[in-house]
Image (cartoon, rainbow, N blue to C red; front, top):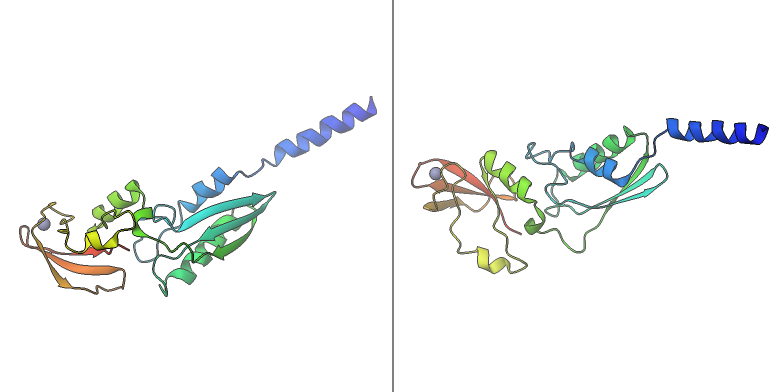
Length: 176
Ligand SMILES: [Zn+2]
């Protein structure tokens, strides 16, 4: 009789502290935005490669977009804070290989880039050279009649174009 009471009080204690699942961590990481493009999350950008869970210990594997991107330490800090708020401990591991490719940006992420005024990078399936001579669509009017203005935009990740139809300058998130 006493034993069964003990068991029931134990199980109700466990129910009070609902366990964290990897899906909860992925969902929370959707709130971590790229510091330079605040409309897109690190998940949509394809930076988060894996989430590992052991009890309340979380491991997050990330692959930075462009090597030496100064935003990286901000991203790591924001990921750590977000996971800590779930009541977990966290280790963020940076994985360099395989290198990040813009193909990993999700469809939702591409739409958000476009709405932000950044022409999303074309998918290339590892054959980056096929993107070199592809016309770059204007994010405002979808015209392919654009000209490159400057290979390097405000960050290494972007190139500046000019739309010859709606006559607006815009940036492309460069394919990588
Ligand atoms: Zn245009």
